[in-house]
Image 1 (cartoon, rainbow, N blue to C red):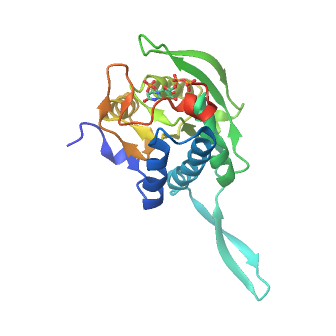
Image 2 (cartoon, protein in one colour):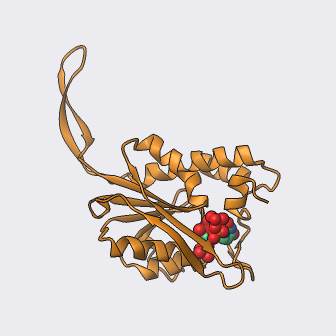
Image 3 (tube, protein in one colour):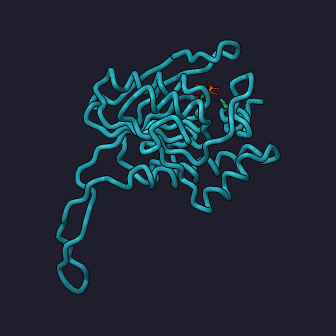
Length: 214
Ligand code: PRP
Ligand code: URA
C-alpha cells in the first residue's frame, strides 16, 4: 500500500496514453517525435486535470431553437512550466485553454547533490486568483516540484494542480506530503530512482530529449 494520500493522485492511464508513453520511453525515439508526444500527452493530462471545473448555464440559439447549454464558469487558469523541460507541455495545455496565462519558473538540478537551483521566476500579476497547472515531464526526488509549489503558495495561489508525465514513488510522496492540498496528475508512477536520482525505467533526461542537447 502507498504511504501517501492517494486521493490526491490521478494516474492518467488511458490506453492511448500508455501507447504514446511507451514510444516516449524508447531510446530510439528522436527529438521531433519526442516533442510531439510530450505535447499530446500534456493534452490528455490537462483534460483530466480540468475535469472538475465548475459549469454554468448559458442560453444558446441553435439554427432550430433556443436551448440551455453548459460553459465553464469563469475559471481563470495559469500554466506554470518548470524550465526547461516543462516548456514542452505548455502548447498542449494552451490548445485546451487558449486564454490561459503562462508563468515561468527556471530551475535546474545540481548534478551532484540533485538539489534544485532557481534562476528565473515570473508570474502573471493576478496569479493568486488563478488555478495553476504546474507542468514538468519528470517527478524524481520532488525537489523541483516542491520548490515550485512553495513559490506559488507564497504568491497566494490556492488551487495548485501538478502535471507530470513520469513520476516515481519517492517524488510522489515528497510532493503530496509537502503540501496537504496540492493535486498531482501523472501518466505513470515508475519503479524507483537510481543512484543518480534518475527514474527507472523512466525515459532519460527529458530536457535533453526535448531540446536535443545530448
Ligand atoms: C528535470 C525535470 C525536473 C527535475 C526533476 O529538470 O524536468 O524539473 O529534473 O527532478 P527532481 O524531482 O529530482 O527535482 P532538470 O533539472 O534536469 O533541468 P532541465 O529541465 O533544464 O533539463
Ligand atoms: N530529470 C529527468 O529529466 N529525468 C529523470 O529521470 C530524473 C530527473
